[in-house]
Image 1 (tube, rainbow, N blue to C red):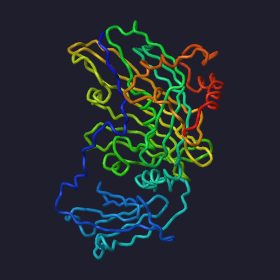
Image 2 (cartoon, rainbow, N blue to C red; image 1 turned 180 degrees about the vertical axis):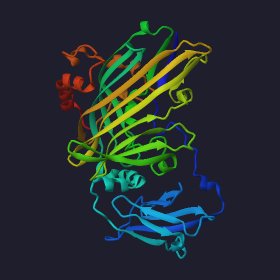
Image 3 (cartoon, rainbow, N blue to C red; image 1 turned 120 degrees about the vertical axis):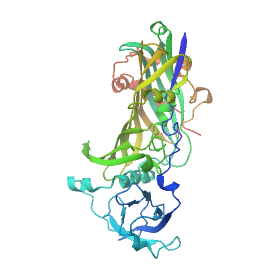
Image 4 (tube, helix red, strand yellow; image 1 turned 90 degrees about the vertical axis):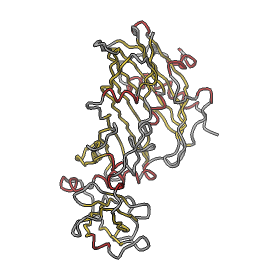
Length: 431
């Protein structure tokens, strides 16, 4: 039997970004120096956008509001430099305005704050890149800055064709969630689990999912920004646009769309972020791999091991991440992964269709982290199907005694809420 593993690698890291702005290849450039501040308070405006009007040449200010902006020396003297920041009126400058500025004495650029009312005319004028940078700049204000202990319910399903399930796994997880600042990694362990594998439906090809649980955790794009690149470099690879405003639970959210730039050769993503209009917290991200015409090439990001006689095409790779607000902070709440692919033998027209579905929902959180025994800790290379038998406990599931793949994950959590609550009371805090 030929077996393959589908690895859903961490989106933020599995693509080596090698592109640079075209400008870096040019030797004949001039550098403009500036410092952006609030005209009322004098405070530096971090991550302000600086753009050569009518081009893709752009940069952002650093944590002190200072920028050095390289432009071609052939740029006309009357070209405009636009400086913008979310919640402020943009300012347009001429290149000559920077003539006396240098790295020691950058040009002072004071922006006038405005009231950000969400009427259509204001929404259309919001600078999309500034909104993106501001949302990530405010992560320290909007997300937990201490360790958390979290309980989660996780499930993964691998299906062949329309309705033949090859793998069904469910688990209650303990998560030692690292703060949203610094570089500490999340840790996750299994508390209870169960699963089933149907080899009889696999014919000569069987699929296993490697690292599914850790993938679900690492999809926390706010903690592990950004999708296929970094926050600072995102504008090199993505076009951003403010698509409008959505109201969710009586709150207003900017809908910030992003698409891979036309001249980017790497396989990246397209999608939408929902950013809360007052706090600028990222509440939800929906995105998918930009696959058009590159379905076979995309498979190399997912297939870990396979027979050289097999060929694969990824036809769908879609992701959803959701955050929930509690007492002024936003917490990682839910994620889903949907990957569809087809497999065929070399020189054969016969195709097999497979789909992979992952979901994880947080059911509780508490301060101080949670102790996870090394033996129960899941590593990125682990295959849950190979480990889950060690955590089976028929008594834990009580009346929910069979896996129901067609039920929503919310319905399942409601079915086992008593067991989850009992687990939450028993879970030890980290030392």
